[in-house]
Image (cartoon, rainbow, N blue to C red; front, side):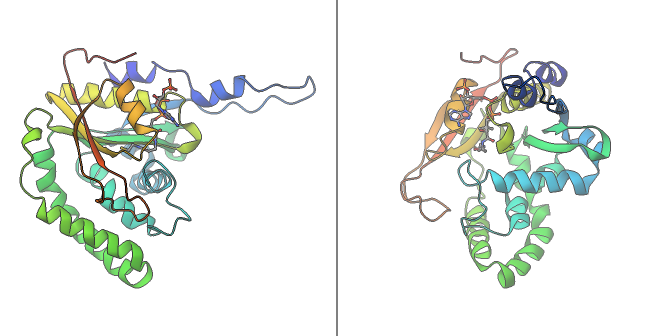
Length: 267
Ligand SMILES: CC(C)(COP(=O)(O)OP(=O)(O)OC[C@H]1O[C@@H](n2cnc3c(N)ncnc32)[C@H](O)[C@@H]1OP(=O)(O)O)[C@@H](O)C(=O)NCCC(=O)NCCS
């Protein structure tokens, strides 16, 4: 399925929500919200510019990053920029041709409302991601002074990534991986489905036979979402490995999906 077809495949969630509002005869109609467009990241970068696009990713990443919940106010990871450097900013910087964003509005004032970013080749990504090191370490130096809790978690993550440097055998069958996050105000309105359909179509185009992704047993939104989109559990981790304090029972869940010429989607 092309990105264009994916974009046309779901009703605009904001308009759908507005349509259910009861209005008194004298009430002014609520201003229609701009339709969401699913746009490839390289094209969105040209439209918005890097600063605005990355600011949108930083914001959504942090507001949905704690097993699908908002990190803000939890005291767990308050350095939003460092959080995004660890989890999302590699993709617009090094693989903008692979991922998609959901944009509201047009041109330079368009707003990022969701994203599905990733790679068709996790082995290559594991090599390329080292190029994030200068930006990451510069930000970690700032966090060491001003956000010590964020710094500690980032340090654990970076040393864990070094220890895990060996190629993963599951990359052969499922070489692509993704990260998907939708602005909380638009969730459950079809944006996530449009984004992941566009991403899957792109991975097929780039020749990836399968996709995998990691989530957690704590993520009550993502698990039904992936199952509905035809993903199956590839592996389940042990408890006690959570990066985030306060989730002793959390277990890592890897999901996978084979990409045929027409990927099967469960009802
Ligand atoms: C997971 C996520 C990307 C789905 O995007 P979305 O735009 O809400 O998804 P869609 O509207 O296209 O699909 C809706 C389906 O997703 C699942 N879903 C989404 N939100 C859900 C919720 N709060 N509770 C249960 N299921 C939910 C359901 O299967 C739902 O179908 P249904 O409404 O028929 O029950 C979105 O909820 C999100 O960004 N969550 C926070 C970030 C996150 O957890 N990302 C995944 C990290 S691995």
